[in-house]
Length: 142
Image (cartoon, rainbow, N blue to C red):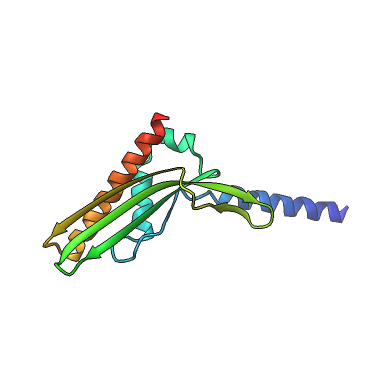
């Protein structure tokens, strides 16, 4: 009798933890000088329509971003922002893993001269937003 109660308690605890930990919407592989993970996550959250989230649930897919660039020798801010939809697979031992094999991707880039570091970061945020909007438009269309 005691063993059954312990098993029930363990199952209840595991079920509670599974429900309490929602899957993240996105992951970020950006360089730290232009974009941090929190900023990227907020941009994803603000720009992914509900229809796309419903079509591509976070249990099976993950959105990923990769923002790279910085200043070149001529002091020009160069930014490349890539937004991708990656599949999530279930492995027997490791569990759910994101596979870097983009289902769809979109890239936006720009080069602007005479900017400060903060202005260059703003360009990076704008370009990531453009890439996300392009990606989600393509995903919503079919």
